[in-house]
Amino acid sequence: MNKLGKFEDAIECFDEVIKLNPKNKNAWNNKGAILYELGDLKRALECFERTLKIDPILEEAQFNKEKVENELNE
Image 1 (cartoon, rainbow, N blue to C red):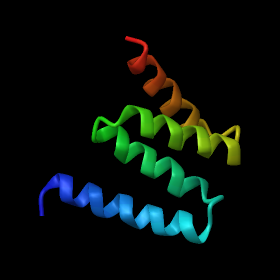
Image 2 (image 1 turned 120 degrees about the vertical axis):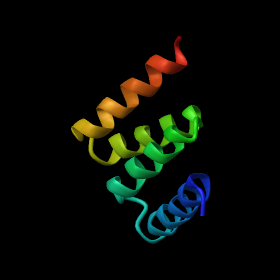
Image 3 (image 1 turned 135 degrees about the vertical axis):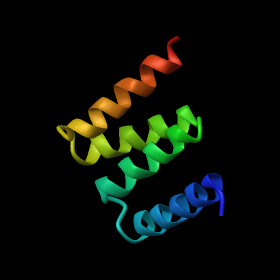
Image 4 (image 1 turned 90 degrees about the vertical axis):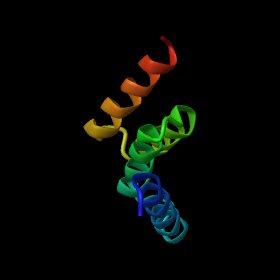
């Protein structure tokens, strides 16, 4: 399986976790990280924003969100 296939499988897994527990900050943040790696910056940003609604002080999500916003503004 190639890298893209593994990422798509991971996104499906995170989607299942989110379905079971929509407030799982780690699932949202990790899904955003994968979407970022795939170049889907807008969807990644949405995931990081959802993460921060659940946990506003999660540093990793804050960093990820800022990174994506900077790239979108370039």
